[in-house]
Image 1 (cartoon, one colour):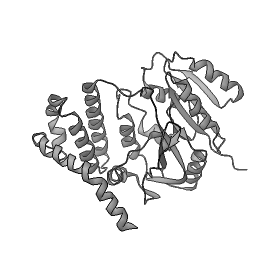
Image 2 (image 1 turned 90 degrees about the vertical axis):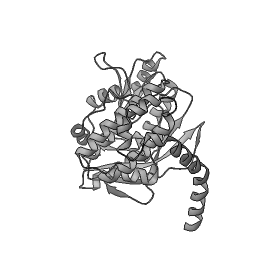
Image 3 (image 1 turned 45 degrees about the horizontal axis):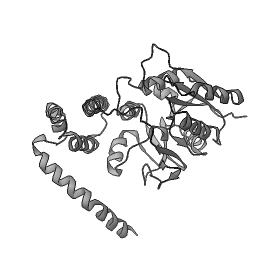
Image 4 (image 1 turned 120 degrees about the vertical axis):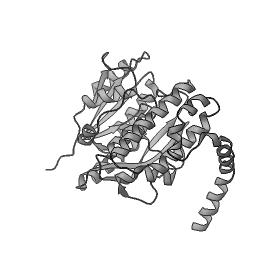
Length: 318
């Protein structure tokens, strides 16, 4: 009799017990039952440990760990520790404020188990705010699968980003790619994706399931209010990503131009010295800091007319 593979669900958490309980419940609601849920606490002071330990009494698949002191504080460090404690064939990364639909893991495991390719499963995602779901964001509207090396091209074409919990990834692939970079305070997920791509043949877009990306008033554990620190962290992450993609000959020019232009437009006025110091990075992707007024005007026109153009194109398709 064929038994289901084990899936390890790894949840880092810090002082968000109310949200964490709902996240854990979305795990327990899974149609797929062969899972372990590894919760790694980053030093919470809100009673998280007590609440989770009560849940463990009735479900031994839940496991609670405190981040060891030798592991630096932070979400990426907790994810790494959780991975070291995991035993699953597949890994489900899940933040303590996000949710999974009931079919998420079962549908993705089925597709991965049926393929002979080195593949990562994706699914659609939905913004979840004040208890209400917005329209579903199709990860890639017209592709059920595509070559892994085309990920950044597809992201740019569809103006999308991928929430980390939309993936289900073979554990062996993560071991080969390497764990999360603990020195990154922002963009750690996209840098992680960049290394995963080199280990994968295909991304499989799985239907009839989705994940919820929750918007709330709690603080984001990867966000700083320091604009300078945020900008430097973003630049550092893109430099690391650039190096990884170049080494593995992965197309990314259009994606980088899109993302770096957004960074330029957001930070040029408030952190212009840093932007100027890294002008060489922007220049590689056709962005010239001397043309700041041109980009500003172009962006303003885009914001004003893009919704109209999108509406017209939709009308043509219908």
